[in-house]
Amino acid sequence: MRAQRVWKVNGDASIGQLQSRLDDLNKRLGQLESQQPDSWTLEELRASALSLSREIDDIRCAEATAALSELLRK
Image 1 (cartoon, rainbow, N blue to C red):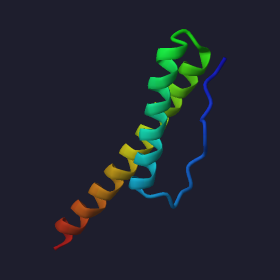
Image 2 (cartoon, helix red, strand yellow; image 1 turned 90 degrees about the horizontal axis):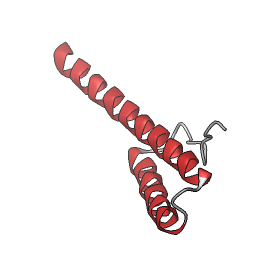
Image 3 (cartoon, rainbow, N blue to C red; image 1 turned 180 degrees about the horizontal axis):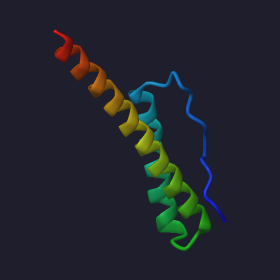
Image 4 (cartoon, rainbow, N blue to C red; image 1 turned 180 degrees about the vertical axis):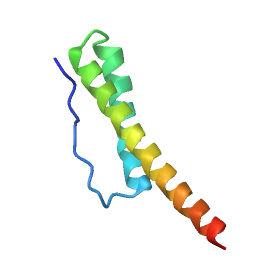
């Protein structure tokens, strides 16, 4: 079974909002791991957490690239 996102992230979501969602997801993962270590839901949640962390990284990289481009223009 292929993992699916738990939620869809709004294009206007800030890094803070995304990080908060990731923190909540990681907390749920920790709880589920202690209760049902072999659950297929764990794999789906892990995949969602990885996807969300990649999205956060993409936004941060885009912001850093834009800032660097601005500095280089000066």
